[in-house]
Image (tube, rainbow, N blue to C red):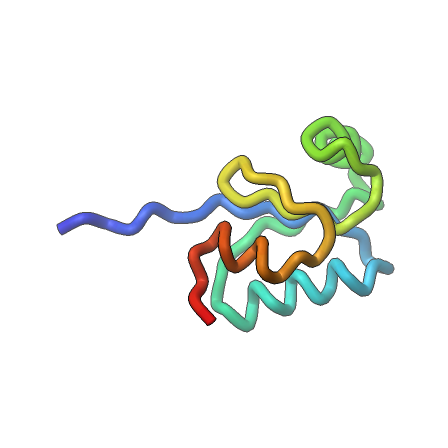
Length: 84
């Protein structure tokens, strides 16, 4: 029996970002585990996010090495293979 590969998901966010909260709520509603990285408190993580995405704004979502900038629900669904 083939086991499903677990997605590796990181959400680069800040506490004051409303779109960051929306991304995290969406993932939680779909019972998807993710790592929340607060770039407002972690300068090294902020630099890593900028290097990966070319963006200094949040949210930046990393799904299995794919970078999605902003709360692009359709792109997130596609990357996670969520139907509907």
